[in-house]
Image (cartoon, rainbow, N blue to C red; front, side, top):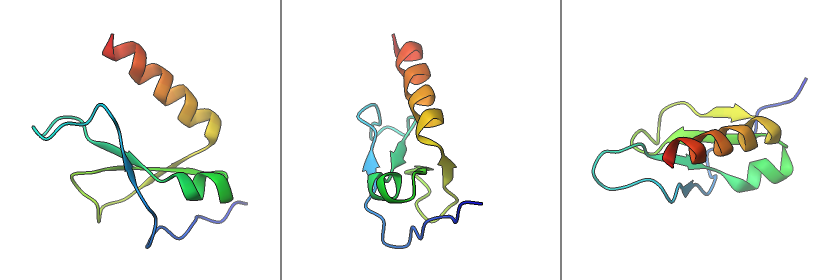
Length: 71
């Protein structure tokens, strides 16, 4: 069993596709991805809300899927 990383002080990175017009705003935290091998993802419009924890493989698939949808 993997222990969820403490995200209280995580540095979040906003997606380059996010905008200031209320569009799809996604953030991820790279440090826990490196140390816990889980990629935290959250809605940047709700920073105190829940974070989804993805495996690096699942994160890569999500990013690839989103890139295909953007084209």
